[in-house]
Length: 107
Image (cartoon, rainbow, N blue to C red; front, side, top):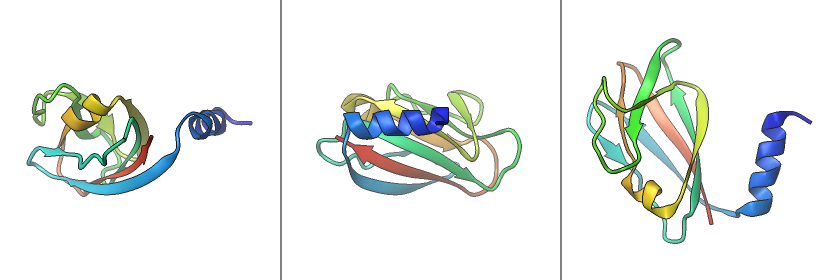
């Protein structure tokens, strides 16, 4: 059993998926449309870039820039826990290209 499989199995036991969203990240700051009751989200950064960082984000409501914020490379996944963090998170593209967030919400 792979580590990824173990994480997904544990996630499915602790939370129930109930909604999803796709957000295109551009040079303008974007946020999520968090559905009522969401407590957790799995976010996959889909990107046309093959090197460097695709997006940057802050979870505290601060707007990131192309040079500030937590950097995320393209074609990777991460998770966010907590309703307030989901509502406050902000994204921006870190470099040119096509960047989409594929988001699965859980409660």
